[in-house]
Amino acid sequence: MSQTKISPEDRQAITDTLSRYVWCMDTRHIEGVVAVFTQDGVIRDVTGNVWDETAGGVRAFATHFLTLPERPVSQHWLQPMIFENMDVSDYCVTSYWALLALDANTGDKSFRSFGSYRDTCVNLNGVWLIKEKRIDPWKSEEPR
Image (cartoon, rainbow, N blue to C red; front, top):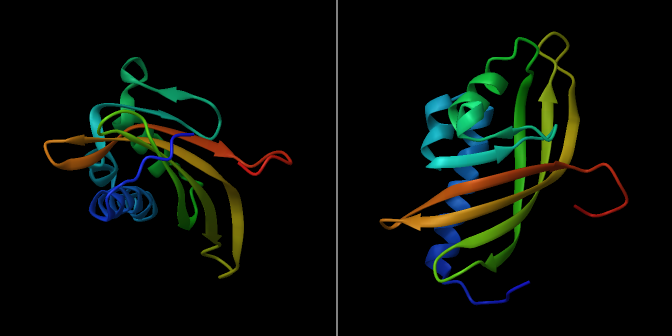
């Protein structure tokens, strides 16, 4: 794990990008999800499916998950934890996430799932975007 210093401005800009992703997922804003990724962005979802160009990319991922009829009203809680320098201007950020769900019929709230994200973030023309997102559910004694 590289321990290169990241500027406070870049750290905040990357954190803002990651926060926009979860906000757009929770508000079901497909275009917002697409906007925080590079054009060739790739997602490996919680089930292990890879959403790359051949699978329709980020737009197909967002459309699929945000239009599921059984998708509950939800809130992602995100905690960016570790910033690793990948090369001169790219960072990999490992974060914990938790997904809370609301049962619209009863008003009951519950934790639906937990896990970690591993996001490769790149700076394109002064804007931090996600190039690759790996979504790992917490299914073992490992803290990831």
